[in-house]
Image (cartoon, rainbow, N blue to C red; front, top):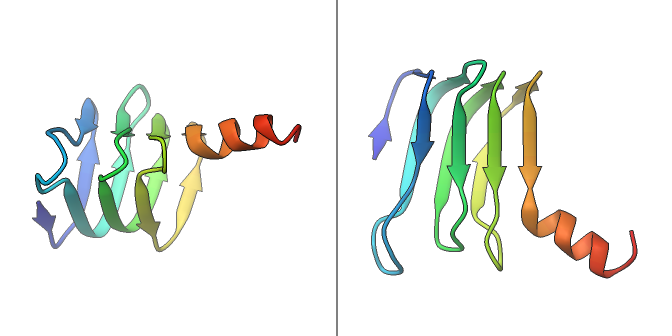
Length: 94
């Protein structure tokens, strides 16, 4: 999916499907993730490119080798969960 402008999420955005499917989202403008909203990328093959992310809700990135997100700028007053990095840090004793 390609959106050239801005997106406001007040619900849930999740990429779905399986390997080989097109699991990509590109937002040229700002993604505003409102309070209570969720933006989830939890599979290895999911990719997002977002001009800027204003997060007041919940953002989850995960997977065994990590979903890949490129964000131009981030303003966060919600929660960002990076499952891969937290798990790897715990395994190293960080």
